[in-house]
Image (cartoon, rainbow, N blue to C red):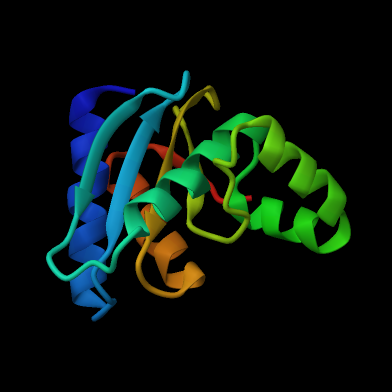
Length: 140
């Protein structure tokens, strides 16, 4: 993931959030290997939202599926999600808002994690940011 794409994703996600009167958000973007490309937390964002956003994105990257799919898996296979969470050092938050990012040819290039509003709204902001960077979102 290019830095310019990560910055575009964050900016557009926050524009989406303000246009839809969401609560203040924390947004993180990782590249495909799990290195942080960019991070931002809006003024007034509640404590630990950054860490929750990171857990959504890192969990998605670690298991290769958006955090919406991880939530569905947690509902049917709670022991698996608990084991996976332990195996990856606790960095797995299985609720919507962790979205995989793919290039035009379908190659995984990173993940976005957002926290601060409802999980569905977090996910919508991530998808808006990814679309603004002209990349493909895979929320699961």
